[in-house]
Amino acid sequence: MTTERIYRTDQYASECVSEIVNVKEIKGCDAIVCSASVFYPEGGGQPSDTGTVSLGDRIFEVISAYDESLEGPVWHYTDAPAGTFSPGDEVTLAIDWDQRFINMQRHLGEHMLSGAFHTLFGGVNKGFHMGEDYITIDIDLGGRMLTEEELDLAEREVNEAVWADLPVTVNWFDDYESSLVMPVRKQVPHEGRVSVVMVGDLPDPYDCIACCGTHPSTSGQVGLVAIYKCDPNKGMNRVFFDCGKRALEHLSADSKELSGIAKRYSCKTADLPSRLDSEAENISSLKGRLAALASYVSEKEKALILEEIAASKAGVYVYSTDILSTDELLKLGFAVSAETSGMLLVFMQTAANTCLLFSSGDARCGKLVKENAAAYHGRGGGRDDNARALFSELKDMKSFANALEEMVK
Image (cartoon, rainbow, N blue to C red; front, side, top):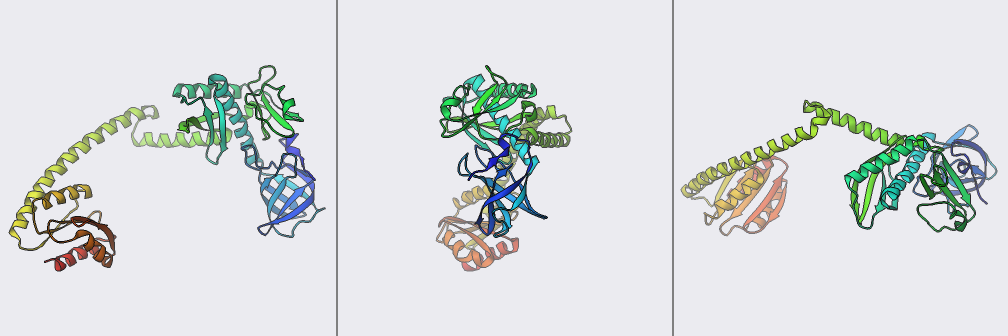
């Protein structure tokens, strides 16, 4: 039992009438095998087609198609309740053509870009993944990383071949040895029949590779190939890119976003790099001034705090601020604690609802937080000499500080 795979001889066929030859239940739904099918089953890095199956006037979704071998039956997993279909039923299978054509664009574009890296730099494609938002290929150059100039060259090269509208043909061979008459860029031993996809003409095609996927009949239908970025991955180059409609949508979205950013900065998109560099310099300068001001404020506050502590006979000193950051407050707390003895310091950063405890005596800060913060909807912990507690509301933090004043006298 097998399935006539119509997509192998007519990749543009989107619908067919067929007879069901086998049915099985998967998770409460029918999966069917038909005598013929336009559905491409997942494989070779390409997702399966989706679409519909019609039985009379009832229409059901085909969620995915799959097979167990290239010459075996194609199973169509549907959303039809188990028992809907029976062997002998005549059904109409229809694929989601937009999805199929996008996959065809992307798959052929991947072949052609891999071919460009191979021709230009001797790179070997060691991995391929067709994701929802982008495609990736892992190009092995013996540990060498591609430069930006090389990526640009490969992108220009592959798009020139796309726009040349080269013919795309598929040649079938009974076995792997027979397929070696074709100038494939990568030999992959394979059992059974072999299909070789060729872009261009013999004896010197633009690309030639064994593949079981679906592809448009000419390279021009790919539209364009856009490389997004390249990252190191296990000693190879992981190239992120896309083709055709998906690439156009991505580039269009990026263009609109860049235009929006340029508008915010009142400049042209071409001037954004220099404008952002200028902004970065201003921010760096402001950070320096802010750090100097924070240091100045901290020194002044430290002096005032020490004066108040000297004049007080209490064992707890509570201080709050929304000017100093939590990190700056932490430094201030350590500085004050180093010049006092027998004190519990309770420092509150009111903007962040963060309470810092410092002890220069017997008070165990971490224990105080762990045993009392939860009663005021707080959480935290720390060591004997310092601890931190975070609260969802300012009033809870203040209540916690007041409670500490009562506990430690």
